[in-house]
Image 1 (cartoon, rainbow, N blue to C red):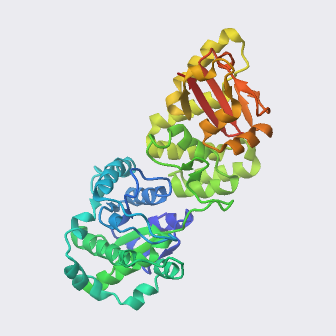
Image 2 (cartoon, rainbow, N blue to C red; image 1 turned 30 degrees about the horizontal axis):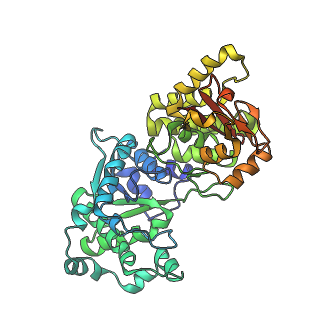
Image 3 (spheres, rainbow, N blue to C red; image 1 turned 90 degrees about the vertical axis):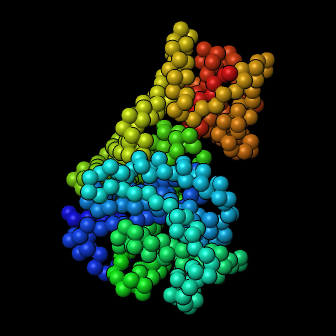
Length: 428
C-alpha cells in the first residue's frame, strides 16, 4: 500500500484536501503537526499525532514536530469549553524541555534523506510586532471567515464566549504553516479533526500570499466504545513521561483495552502489519478470553514509547505484581517480599512509616483511601462490597485494621482494588 491507502485502512483519514493522495504517492512531502507545551510531558492523547508523523517518515517523507512555544502562550480554543489558564514563559520553556526527548523517542532525527525536525514557533511568532502581524497576516482573513470556524463558533455559543486572545489563535497557526512552507518547503499539515479549521486557514494563507498549493489531513478524535474520554484512567491522564505514569501503569492501560476498541487501537498506534492485525482480530472473535490482541497492543506501544528493554521490564513487573503466589508459608514470605520490593520502582507503590502499623495498626479504609486516592466513603464502599484484598486475603470489614504482623515478612503489603489494580505498600 502507498501511504494514503495505509492511512485509510488504519482509519486515520477523517478528512483531507483534494489531491493529497496523488501528492503523497508521487512526491516527497514535508509535513508537520503542532504540540503545544501545556505540560512538561506529552500524554497518550498526543500519541496518535506522533505515531502518524513517524509512519509518514517511514514512507520516505519528512516530518516536522512544532513545539509550540509561541502558540502555547495563547492556547488553542479547539475542543475546549472554556479558556485555558495562561502559562508563563518560564513554564513554557520548562515544558518544552520535557517534551523534546519524547518527540525524539518516536521520530528519527538522523534518518538519511528525510530526518525529522523539532522547531519552536516562538522563533518567529515572538519576533512579530503587533502592527506588523496585523498587516502581514491579519489582513488576509475576514472576521466572517473566522466566525465560521467550529472552534470559534462553539465558544461563541457558550456562556463564557471567547476572548480576543484565543480568537487570534487561528491566525497564529496559519502563520506557522506559512513560515514552515517558506523555511522548509512544508506543504502538509496534519492534526486531529478539531484542527481542520486551523489547518485550512493556513492553506488559504499560503494560497493568497505565495500562490502555492498546500494540503491538510486530519485524523479522527480517538474515543472508547464505552464513551469515556480516551487517554484517561481512574488515576488521571496517561503520560509519556515515566516519572508521571510508571511504565507498568502505561502498559496496563493498553492491556485493559476493551475488546471493542483493541483492533482500532492496533491500527492507530502500532506498526503491526495488516496480516498481523487481521490475525489478532480473528483471535478476538474466536478466543476473546486469551486477550492476545491486548497483549500485542500493550507490548507494541510500550516498546514504541519507552524502548524494547523497558517494555520487557514493564511486562515482567506486571507479571510479578499480578501473578505472585502469596499463599506460601512463613518460610517463603521473605523471598516473596524481596521479589515484590525489587519491582517497587516500576509499579504503583507507596512507602508508609512502619510505626503506623504498630499497636492496633492502620484501618483498612484509611489505607485504601491513602493508597488509591479515592475518598474515604468510596474506600468504605469498596471494602464492604468485597472489592479489596490485602496479600490475597479479602477484607470486607470496614473496621478491620492491619498491623506489621500482617505484612509479608513485616515489610510489604500487596493491596488489590477490583480485578485490575494492584498497589505495593512498603513499610519504611
